[in-house]
Length: 115
Length: 115
Image (cartoon, rainbow over all chains, first blue to last red; front, side, top):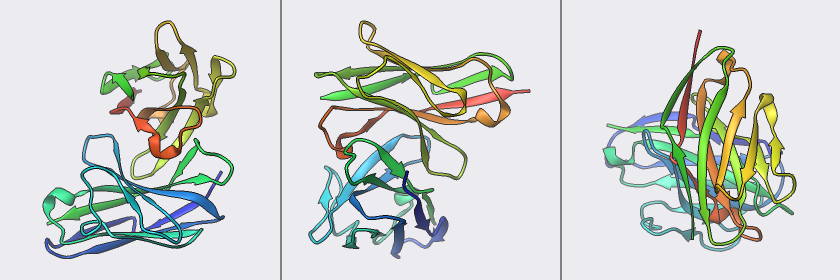
């Protein structure tokens, strides 16, 4: 398995501000993903964080709103920009270990409340 | 295209009773299937996975699931519920050779265990 440390674990933010969420993995991984889990709903993939290149965003998500960094094979950040109450969700970092292209591991999530 | 349907957003069982959480999938090719559990304020943890080997898959914490192609189902069971099993459970599907980016989650089932 992979040990994933995600922080902050929770935050309450004012609308119009930005929050950067960090994801640290205990080993090098090929693929890192960011998910959003809105209240009472399932997980929706925001983007794939690619090391050394721009992230790949899913339909409905854009770089200006959710900029992502992936400076190396063990670390990534997701920023939620210009927040509104609709951004209140749990944001989850996920990784797939090198050599396994289907088994995903998850961080504990960041519970974001925008007021 | 692939999808997962979890029947029942909330399931309640008594402690010691059988746990049955239902998952039906749709996939144009033979799928890989997963069950994840999410405890309060935590990320997702893999319970078990089916990757085209044995159709009866045993996972952690006494859970198991059976892949039934004829019924396109992958229901999760546990013979005797424990209070610590109270959590949200997600079924997920992807395709062999597909990346974790193509992991599709169901809407989740909240399991409550009554004393």
